Length: 140
Image 1 (cartoon, helix red, strand yellow):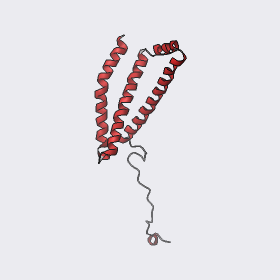
Image 2: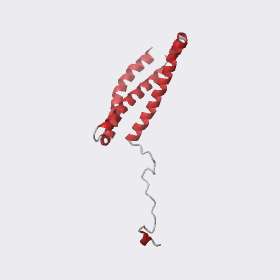
Image 3: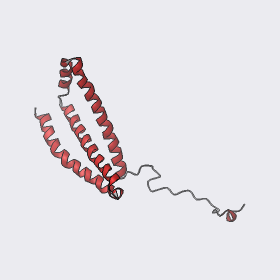
Image 4: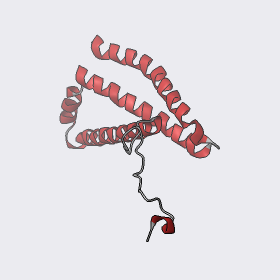
């Protein structure tokens, strides 16, 4: 059967690859907000798990609890607390962004601008908090 009778071209052309080499993830704002939302969610989950476990030490022995809490009072944990607050703030703002995308008519068309808006808002919240928190962490 000839190619003219089947209606297909005589030479098959391979599908064109995008400029990014056919990668699944393109690196746009939507992908990064998705990745950061998952990472911050997992980080918050593990913090809450540790928080519940160390709070449960009160039932075992208050002196052990005090020892564990005392071990948390060092600059490395202070930086960890800063990271935790940063994760919570991003996760909360991005969650609100997701709600707006879902419920605003045309929300998907403005999701890129909302992503950059929450990044700016995150910095507006985190810069003063970081200054205050780090002055307490390193001031003692």
